[in-house]
Length: 318
Ligand code: SAM
Image (cartoon, rainbow, N blue to C red; front, side, top):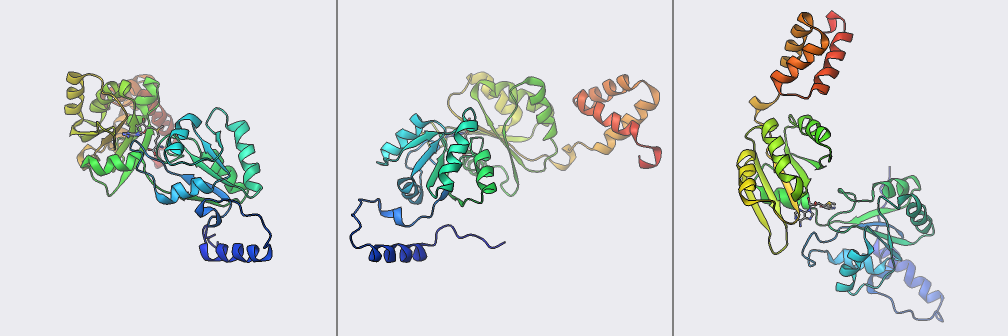
Protein backbone atom coordinates (compact mmCIF):
# COMPACT_ATOMS: atom_id res chain seq x y z
CA UNK A 1 0.00 0.00 0.00
CA UNK A 2 1.43 3.41 -0.85
CA UNK A 3 1.47 5.58 2.25
CA UNK A 4 -0.47 8.82 1.85
CA UNK A 5 1.69 11.66 2.98
CA UNK A 6 -0.71 13.88 4.87
CA UNK A 7 1.15 17.16 4.76
CA UNK A 8 3.25 17.83 1.76
CA UNK A 9 3.89 21.51 2.34
CA UNK A 10 5.88 22.25 -0.79
CA UNK A 11 3.40 20.68 -3.21
CA UNK A 12 0.38 22.26 -1.55
CA UNK A 13 2.09 25.65 -1.38
CA UNK A 14 2.99 25.39 -5.06
CA UNK A 15 -0.59 24.43 -5.94
CA UNK A 16 -2.01 27.30 -3.99
CA UNK A 17 0.36 29.98 -5.21
CA UNK A 18 -0.34 29.00 -8.83
CA UNK A 19 -4.06 29.24 -8.04
CA UNK A 20 -3.49 32.75 -6.71
CA UNK A 21 -1.61 33.74 -9.84
CA UNK A 22 -4.53 32.51 -11.93
CA UNK A 23 -6.95 34.65 -9.92
CA UNK A 24 -5.30 38.04 -9.44
CA UNK A 25 -8.66 39.58 -8.57
CA UNK A 26 -9.44 37.06 -5.86
CA UNK A 27 -10.46 39.02 -2.74
CA UNK A 28 -7.87 38.90 0.02
CA UNK A 29 -9.28 36.90 2.89
CA UNK A 30 -7.62 37.26 6.22
CA UNK A 31 -6.36 33.74 6.83
CA UNK A 32 -4.58 32.12 9.74
CA UNK A 33 -0.96 31.48 8.71
CA UNK A 34 -1.20 27.69 8.42
CA UNK A 35 -4.43 27.56 6.45
CA UNK A 36 -2.64 27.00 3.19
CA UNK A 37 -0.45 24.21 4.56
CA UNK A 38 -2.81 21.45 5.51
CA UNK A 39 -4.88 19.06 3.47
CA UNK A 40 -8.56 18.31 4.05
CA UNK A 41 -9.12 15.34 6.32
CA UNK A 42 -9.66 14.20 9.88
CA UNK A 43 -7.09 15.48 12.38
CA UNK A 44 -6.82 13.74 15.75
CA UNK A 45 -5.61 16.47 18.09
CA UNK A 46 -4.00 15.66 21.44
CA UNK A 47 -4.67 18.33 24.06
CA UNK A 48 -3.31 19.06 27.57
CA UNK A 49 -4.11 16.72 30.48
CA UNK A 50 -3.79 19.52 33.02
CA UNK A 51 -1.41 22.29 32.13
CA UNK A 52 -2.77 24.37 29.25
CA UNK A 53 0.78 24.87 28.00
CA UNK A 54 1.07 21.21 27.03
CA UNK A 55 -0.16 21.45 23.47
CA UNK A 56 2.02 21.38 20.39
CA UNK A 57 2.47 24.31 18.04
CA UNK A 58 1.25 22.10 15.20
CA UNK A 59 -1.92 21.22 17.15
CA UNK A 60 -2.68 24.94 17.55
CA UNK A 61 -1.97 25.62 13.89
CA UNK A 62 -4.15 22.71 12.83
CA UNK A 63 -7.03 23.81 15.06
CA UNK A 64 -6.77 27.32 13.62
CA UNK A 65 -6.90 25.92 10.11
CA UNK A 66 -9.91 23.66 10.72
CA UNK A 67 -13.34 24.21 9.23
CA UNK A 68 -14.85 22.48 12.22
CA UNK A 69 -13.66 21.18 15.59
CA UNK A 70 -15.48 18.11 16.92
CA UNK A 71 -15.22 18.11 20.73
CA UNK A 72 -16.20 15.69 23.45
CA UNK A 73 -17.58 18.64 25.45
CA UNK A 74 -17.72 21.96 23.61
CA UNK A 75 -17.65 23.98 26.86
CA UNK A 76 -14.40 22.38 28.00
CA UNK A 77 -12.72 22.73 24.61
CA UNK A 78 -13.89 26.35 24.31
CA UNK A 79 -11.69 27.19 27.31
CA UNK A 80 -8.64 25.80 25.52
CA UNK A 81 -9.59 27.46 22.25
CA UNK A 82 -10.10 30.87 23.80
CA UNK A 83 -6.79 30.55 25.69
CA UNK A 84 -5.10 30.23 22.27
CA UNK A 85 -7.39 32.71 20.57
CA UNK A 86 -8.81 30.10 18.22
CA UNK A 87 -12.14 31.10 16.83
CA UNK A 88 -13.37 28.13 14.82
CA UNK A 89 -16.86 26.57 15.00
CA UNK A 90 -17.17 23.59 17.34
CA UNK A 91 -19.63 20.72 17.44
CA UNK A 92 -20.22 18.01 20.04
CA UNK A 93 -19.09 14.49 19.26
CA UNK A 94 -19.38 11.90 22.02
CA UNK A 95 -20.72 8.42 22.74
CA UNK A 96 -24.29 9.59 23.22
CA UNK A 97 -24.71 11.58 20.00
CA UNK A 98 -22.44 9.53 17.72
CA UNK A 99 -25.37 8.09 15.74
CA UNK A 100 -26.37 11.51 14.47
CA UNK A 101 -23.09 13.42 14.76
CA UNK A 102 -20.94 10.84 12.98
CA UNK A 103 -22.73 10.93 9.58
CA UNK A 104 -22.67 14.74 9.68
CA UNK A 105 -18.92 14.79 10.28
CA UNK A 106 -18.31 12.23 7.54
CA UNK A 107 -20.39 14.33 5.14
CA UNK A 108 -18.24 17.39 5.88
CA UNK A 109 -15.06 15.36 5.47
CA UNK A 110 -16.29 14.03 2.12
CA UNK A 111 -16.85 17.68 1.16
CA UNK A 112 -13.10 18.13 1.52
CA UNK A 113 -13.22 20.02 4.79
CA UNK A 114 -10.65 19.97 7.58
CA UNK A 115 -12.24 18.46 10.69
CA UNK A 116 -10.29 18.27 13.94
CA UNK A 117 -11.26 15.85 16.68
CA UNK A 118 -10.38 16.78 20.23
CA UNK A 119 -11.37 15.31 23.61
CA UNK A 120 -11.64 16.94 27.03
CA UNK A 121 -8.05 16.01 27.84
CA UNK A 122 -5.20 14.04 26.30
CA UNK A 123 -5.46 11.98 23.17
CA UNK A 124 -8.88 11.27 21.63
CA UNK A 125 -9.80 7.56 21.37
CA UNK A 126 -7.72 6.71 24.46
CA UNK A 127 -10.59 5.99 26.89
CA UNK A 128 -12.30 8.82 24.99
CA UNK A 129 -14.59 9.13 21.95
CA UNK A 130 -13.34 8.84 18.38
CA UNK A 131 -12.92 5.16 17.53
CA UNK A 132 -16.12 4.92 15.48
CA UNK A 133 -15.35 8.14 13.66
CA UNK A 134 -11.89 6.89 12.68
CA UNK A 135 -13.41 3.58 11.53
CA UNK A 136 -15.97 5.43 9.40
CA UNK A 137 -13.31 7.74 7.96
CA UNK A 138 -11.15 4.73 7.04
CA UNK A 139 -14.14 3.11 5.29
CA UNK A 140 -14.64 6.31 3.26
CA UNK A 141 -10.95 6.53 2.40
CA UNK A 142 -10.70 9.93 4.08
CA UNK A 143 -7.28 11.19 5.05
CA UNK A 144 -6.66 10.71 8.79
CA UNK A 145 -3.70 12.14 10.60
CA UNK A 146 -2.77 13.34 14.06
CA UNK A 147 -0.97 16.00 16.02
CA UNK A 148 0.32 13.70 18.77
CA UNK A 149 0.75 14.79 22.36
CA UNK A 150 -0.19 14.03 25.97
CA UNK A 151 -1.61 10.69 27.12
CA UNK A 152 -2.05 10.31 30.88
CA UNK A 153 -1.12 6.59 30.72
CA UNK A 154 2.28 7.26 29.15
CA UNK A 155 3.06 10.28 31.31
CA UNK A 156 2.23 8.19 34.40
CA UNK A 157 4.36 5.28 33.20
CA UNK A 158 7.39 7.55 32.87
CA UNK A 159 6.91 8.76 36.46
CA UNK A 160 6.08 5.41 38.02
CA UNK A 161 9.55 3.88 38.27
CA UNK A 162 8.07 0.62 36.94
CA UNK A 163 9.43 -1.21 33.87
CA UNK A 164 8.70 0.67 30.67
CA UNK A 165 10.01 -1.85 28.13
CA UNK A 166 6.64 -3.58 27.92
CA UNK A 167 3.36 -2.20 29.19
CA UNK A 168 -0.32 -3.03 28.87
CA UNK A 169 -2.88 -0.23 28.85
CA UNK A 170 -6.05 -1.63 30.45
CA UNK A 171 -8.09 1.61 30.54
CA UNK A 172 -10.95 1.72 33.06
CA UNK A 173 -11.96 -1.46 34.87
CA UNK A 174 -15.63 -2.48 34.53
CA UNK A 175 -17.81 -0.77 37.17
CA UNK A 176 -19.59 -3.93 38.35
CA UNK A 177 -17.84 -5.86 41.09
CA UNK A 178 -17.80 -9.33 39.49
CA UNK A 179 -16.82 -8.10 36.03
CA UNK A 180 -14.08 -6.02 37.62
CA UNK A 181 -12.70 -8.95 39.58
CA UNK A 182 -12.73 -11.15 36.48
CA UNK A 183 -10.87 -8.52 34.50
CA UNK A 184 -8.23 -8.23 37.23
CA UNK A 185 -7.80 -12.02 37.09
CA UNK A 186 -7.62 -12.01 33.30
CA UNK A 187 -4.66 -9.64 33.43
CA UNK A 188 -2.79 -11.49 36.18
CA UNK A 189 -0.35 -13.21 33.85
CA UNK A 190 0.36 -10.35 31.45
CA UNK A 191 4.17 -10.06 31.64
CA UNK A 192 4.13 -6.26 31.47
CA UNK A 193 3.48 -3.18 33.58
CA UNK A 194 -0.31 -2.79 33.76
CA UNK A 195 -1.77 0.70 33.40
CA UNK A 196 -5.28 1.50 34.62
CA UNK A 197 -7.35 4.67 34.68
CA UNK A 198 -9.25 4.71 37.95
CA UNK A 199 -11.62 7.03 39.75
CA UNK A 200 -10.61 8.12 43.28
CA UNK A 201 -13.96 6.80 44.54
CA UNK A 202 -13.23 3.23 43.45
CA UNK A 203 -9.50 3.18 44.10
CA UNK A 204 -9.51 1.74 47.61
CA UNK A 205 -11.70 -1.24 46.63
CA UNK A 206 -9.66 -1.81 43.47
CA UNK A 207 -6.39 -1.91 45.40
CA UNK A 208 -7.84 -4.41 47.89
CA UNK A 209 -9.00 -6.64 45.05
CA UNK A 210 -5.61 -6.37 43.35
CA UNK A 211 -3.72 -7.12 46.56
CA UNK A 212 -5.74 -10.36 46.85
CA UNK A 213 -5.11 -11.40 43.29
CA UNK A 214 -1.71 -9.92 42.37
CA UNK A 215 -0.11 -10.19 45.82
CA UNK A 216 2.81 -7.95 46.63
CA UNK A 217 3.66 -6.69 43.17
CA UNK A 218 5.20 -3.19 43.01
CA UNK A 219 2.78 -0.46 42.08
CA UNK A 220 2.45 3.30 41.63
CA UNK A 221 -0.36 5.80 42.00
CA UNK A 222 0.15 8.83 39.80
CA UNK A 223 -2.19 11.72 40.47
CA UNK A 224 -2.91 15.10 38.88
CA UNK A 225 -0.12 14.97 36.30
CA UNK A 226 1.03 18.42 35.18
CA UNK A 227 -1.27 20.12 37.71
CA UNK A 228 -0.53 21.94 40.96
CA UNK A 229 -0.94 18.86 43.15
CA UNK A 230 0.90 16.37 40.98
CA UNK A 231 1.95 13.41 43.12
CA UNK A 232 3.46 9.94 42.71
CA UNK A 233 3.15 7.24 45.38
CA UNK A 234 5.24 4.10 44.95
CA UNK A 235 5.18 0.87 46.94
CA UNK A 236 3.72 -2.61 46.87
CA UNK A 237 0.01 -2.90 46.17
CA UNK A 238 -0.56 -3.67 49.86
CA UNK A 239 1.47 -0.66 51.02
CA UNK A 240 -0.41 1.69 48.72
CA UNK A 241 -3.70 0.20 49.86
CA UNK A 242 -2.78 0.79 53.53
CA UNK A 243 -1.60 4.34 52.83
CA UNK A 244 -4.86 5.09 51.10
CA UNK A 245 -6.87 3.72 54.00
CA UNK A 246 -4.95 5.97 56.35
CA UNK A 247 -5.18 9.09 54.17
CA UNK A 248 -8.73 8.71 52.88
CA UNK A 249 -10.04 9.07 49.36
CA UNK A 250 -7.61 11.01 47.17
CA UNK A 251 -8.74 13.90 44.98
CA UNK A 252 -8.27 14.49 41.31
CA UNK A 253 -7.37 12.27 38.42
CA UNK A 254 -5.45 9.07 38.91
CA UNK A 255 -3.49 6.49 36.97
CA UNK A 256 -2.77 3.22 38.74
CA UNK A 257 0.17 1.12 37.58
CA UNK A 258 1.10 -2.41 38.60
CA UNK A 259 4.54 -3.89 37.94
CA UNK A 260 4.83 -7.15 35.97
CA UNK A 261 4.52 -10.49 37.80
CA UNK A 262 7.73 -12.26 38.74
CA UNK A 263 8.01 -15.60 36.92
CA UNK A 264 7.07 -17.58 40.06
CA UNK A 265 3.89 -15.55 40.46
CA UNK A 266 2.60 -16.45 37.00
CA UNK A 267 -0.45 -18.61 37.45
CA UNK A 268 0.39 -21.89 35.79
CA UNK A 269 -2.60 -23.11 33.84
CA UNK A 270 -1.20 -26.61 33.45
CA UNK A 271 -1.17 -26.97 37.24
CA UNK A 272 -4.82 -25.85 37.41
CA UNK A 273 -5.72 -28.26 34.61
CA UNK A 274 -4.02 -31.17 36.37
CA UNK A 275 -5.87 -30.50 39.63
CA UNK A 276 -9.16 -29.91 37.81
CA UNK A 277 -8.88 -33.19 35.90
CA UNK A 278 -8.20 -35.02 39.17
CA UNK A 279 -11.17 -33.35 40.86
CA UNK A 280 -13.48 -34.03 37.90
CA UNK A 281 -12.65 -37.71 38.16
CA UNK A 282 -13.55 -37.75 41.87
CA UNK A 283 -16.61 -35.51 42.16
CA UNK A 284 -19.40 -33.73 40.31
CA UNK A 285 -18.51 -30.93 37.90
CA UNK A 286 -20.06 -28.42 40.27
CA UNK A 287 -18.06 -29.60 43.26
CA UNK A 288 -14.86 -29.80 41.21
CA UNK A 289 -15.28 -26.19 40.04
CA UNK A 290 -15.96 -25.07 43.61
CA UNK A 291 -12.91 -26.89 44.96
CA UNK A 292 -10.45 -25.67 42.31
CA UNK A 293 -11.68 -22.08 42.29
CA UNK A 294 -11.22 -21.99 46.06
CA UNK A 295 -7.80 -23.57 46.09
CA UNK A 296 -6.38 -21.34 43.29
CA UNK A 297 -8.35 -18.23 44.25
CA UNK A 298 -9.75 -18.04 40.72
CA UNK A 299 -13.26 -16.98 39.67
CA UNK A 300 -15.69 -19.90 39.45
CA UNK A 301 -16.84 -18.85 36.00
CA UNK A 302 -13.32 -19.15 34.61
CA UNK A 303 -12.79 -22.61 36.16
CA UNK A 304 -16.25 -23.71 35.01
CA UNK A 305 -15.43 -22.69 31.42
CA UNK A 306 -12.16 -24.63 31.58
CA UNK A 307 -13.94 -27.65 33.10
CA UNK A 308 -16.38 -27.66 30.19
CA UNK A 309 -13.50 -27.47 27.73
CA UNK A 310 -11.72 -30.34 29.49
CA UNK A 311 -14.78 -32.55 29.65
CA UNK A 312 -15.46 -32.04 25.94
CA UNK A 313 -11.91 -33.09 24.96
CA UNK A 314 -11.13 -36.74 24.53
CA UNK A 315 -8.32 -38.24 26.59
CA UNK A 316 -5.69 -38.10 23.85
CA UNK A 317 -6.10 -34.32 23.68
CA UNK A 318 -5.48 -33.80 27.38
N1 SAM B 1 -7.76 10.64 26.63
C1 SAM B 1 -7.12 10.77 27.90
C2 SAM B 1 -5.64 10.42 27.75
O1 SAM B 1 -5.12 10.52 26.66
O2 SAM B 1 -5.02 10.09 28.74
C3 SAM B 1 -7.82 9.94 28.98
C4 SAM B 1 -9.24 10.30 29.18
S1 SAM B 1 -10.03 9.36 30.42
C5 SAM B 1 -11.71 9.81 30.15
C6 SAM B 1 -9.69 10.24 31.89
C7 SAM B 1 -8.76 9.48 32.82
O3 SAM B 1 -7.41 9.69 32.43
C8 SAM B 1 -8.84 9.96 34.25
O4 SAM B 1 -9.87 9.32 34.97
C9 SAM B 1 -7.47 9.57 34.79
O5 SAM B 1 -7.44 8.19 35.10
C10 SAM B 1 -6.59 9.81 33.57
N2 SAM B 1 -6.05 11.19 33.59
C11 SAM B 1 -6.39 12.21 32.79
N3 SAM B 1 -5.69 13.31 33.11
C12 SAM B 1 -4.91 12.99 34.17
C13 SAM B 1 -3.95 13.70 34.95
N4 SAM B 1 -3.68 14.96 34.73
N5 SAM B 1 -3.35 13.03 35.95
C14 SAM B 1 -3.61 11.72 36.20
N6 SAM B 1 -4.49 11.01 35.47
C15 SAM B 1 -5.13 11.62 34.46
